[in-house]
Amino acid sequence: MSADARILAAEPGCHLFPGEGEAGCGFEAPTIGMFFPEPWLGGIPGSDGIDLYLVLLIVALGASLLLWSWFSKKLSLVPGRRQGVGEMFVLFIRDQITRPTMGAKGDKFIPLMTAIFTLIVFMNISGLIPGMLPVNSDLSFPAMFAIFIFVLTLVVGMRQQGGWGYIRNQIFPPGMPKPIYVLVTPIETLSVFVIRPLTHALRLFATMFAGSLLLAVFAYGGWYMLSIGAEPALAGLSVLFSGAALIGYILFFLFEILIMLVQAFIFTLLASLYLNGSLESAH
Image (cartoon, rainbow, N blue to C red; front, side, top):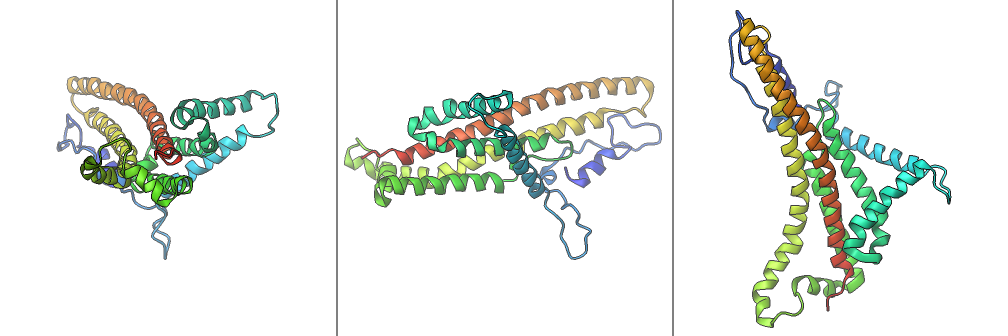
């Protein structure tokens, strides 16, 4: 979260019931400024500092590599508990993502889908670290994933169906009367080559962005309502208000964990679904 928001929340007078000698001030809700944190180590001469999102991305990537290195350590035909957990995870990706969307021909994409899912999960849960943000609350990172999937579908589709064959299958859906293509082709062109990658990125970004903002509202709202310095009756009332905000924060925090996992699943599922359109030849 941004430094200015933390300073504002820490001001003595910024509480629901100001104490004696304190000048009250209204509640200032967190803004989108919290998603533009100051660079780390910005005071180093000749350096603008290190972008927080980049640091968290490197941590998420390292955690993903460590996790799968741990799962794959000392592999054997009779899996132990550690290897068994890793295999269960891979089977989950196969049975819930690649097989339902691509069938058996999608098995070659299981390592890729597993890597994407794992990395997105770690990039999302970075927002659960106090004072940190989900990496995917910065649009550039979901866009990076979406562009990668889009380019991959183009490459796979053109290799599988030929350059024109792939484009034809995407913008000229089979089985329609030819006059209908006057209406359908522009819509399909816009959908496949613009809307699909755009929504693929925005869905993940918007969810992480909104979730982080709501968690910040609960946190700062709870602090604002906690007025220990006020007269006893109002101080007691403020504890009740602040406690309710804390309960709301905890419940939404747990719900946000679920949302982070679901969004990683949806992004990976859509990626597999788009790749299926590249593998299938409609004409």
